[in-house]
Image (cartoon, helix red, strand yellow):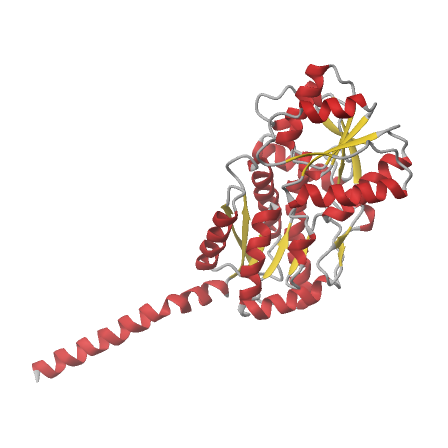
Length: 389
């Protein structure tokens, strides 16, 4: 009898153990029912850390605001941001880490190359994905992915239009990274639109690659010899800072006009920011804007992180509020499967309008293609800060 009782107890314990072990997945589902689990991916270390850190921080402010106000339809947000060092393989690893954590929605990736790679994974899982700043049209080839940033073609077109309409130059030159999909995509559309707008261009765009991005004197001398008085830079801030230094050392007095990748140049380590005086950018966000939402965001960001936020912080802030609006519009609940949640949100995205930090008076709206519609802003660097033009 004792043996039978012992066997029964052991069997009961074994069944309980199996239920507990099998409950790993069940525990995750129960955990998800308590909150919406939003993951983020971007570089918080490495050469592009300015972008990813700003994106992480901007989204965190939005999450904190929403949770403090009671959540989304009474449901709080859990937020987890992973560093990918602007590396494709690390970004995929970060995605898998977030899936294990319980991610239901992805805000990311921050940079284009990693984002393109991760879109393959979100397509496989049918997970809703919205990127704050990966601007290539290759990012939105799948119907589960949306952008808060301008697409590369739009940045190129809008920049050419702004330069022409405001008569900023007699002759325009271009320095771009032909090995980078972001830079080359903007350059191509800029050239096309510049011709339409009647801009006078240098004989040819000046290219560099990832293997030759520390010395730009050849490109600068070529543009200087042709009398170029404005150089369009559809590139990232690190290379831009080198170009500005080398142009100054050559005595080349020329205007510079950039796009969102240049945002961050004022925080480059050991860079003389006086060299950036007069640099113009086309951006969706100006930290000196006087509207209440922008000023509250800027003040909160300064208090928490000790610096003025850039557009990547603002775009990510708007990402979180876009997710909130889509959840509210669709009536989605956290106990839905990742796939069902994705279907609900991507349908709602074309029905919502978000009055964000980066949308101007018109706000942000989305096409079914994943592309955002919003108004760009032009800023100029004066006395070490961005000032609206």
